[in-house]
Image (tube, rainbow, N blue to C red; front, side):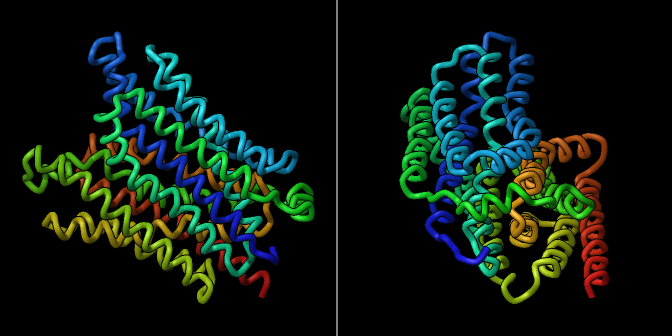
Length: 389
């Protein structure tokens, strides 16, 4: 990676914003839509909601590596644009579905196509330079985070003003706009870089699995909280109406600090080695995760959570940047599957552990998982330094 193609980085990041925005735009009213079209009982419908919400992340986790491997044989730009256009069609079709089995099938296909974010990562890393790769991957992640941040409130407004069908059509139109921009403004990776990607022998090894683990536990830290917020607010003796209003504000606040932390810490990676920075911010974020158990007030809880996400969110692009230089699609795809797995399992871990223990045990359990992955990463990095030194 010698010469940076900022236009590629910018438009691929904007397209990921469009996908994340549309996905979360739909997610906020999707449970209501499912109840609206359901012909099943309330209990059965609730089970359908769980499957329909969780299926895409599981499907994306399983197929992310496959999408990465395709880039060694097919044009990354063509794959990415094809995936974007397929998202456009699927979101549009959702507005005209009236049966839950068909809707679930569409969501599974949408999750399979979610693996195109792996292709986007490969294009970004291949369009970056060694000096800029951490910041460019950080921009890519922040674009997705921004979509996650502003998608839900706008989606709620769209569903109430345009109706469910109109909201689905609006989300589909936005993704189609990104298809057009990527078609005209994203350049194909150079033949030399694609040959390097195709001939690389850097396959899965111990470090790759350790990198997967640290990205997975970081994503779990980011994603577990919304599923248990009612229980958290109950501990602060908040009324249900106030808790519901506060939940959206709290999620927006710590998502915003996650973006700020990613931006600043990825820039810091040019002065401190990525390996060392991953260990430092990972430990600080995990300590803050455990400190959630020690606070006694709502304000301090929110403040700690905001600091925690500012630290831990940066770990993911920093880890990706350490593997990005070889452009191995399988490796990047495998690492990217950790985010999908964390998205899917984070809420499940949160609710499952809490069902059989307490909030404090939950915070320490997730903190312990993160510390174990960080210890493995630190030992692996020390071994690498000793070997080369």
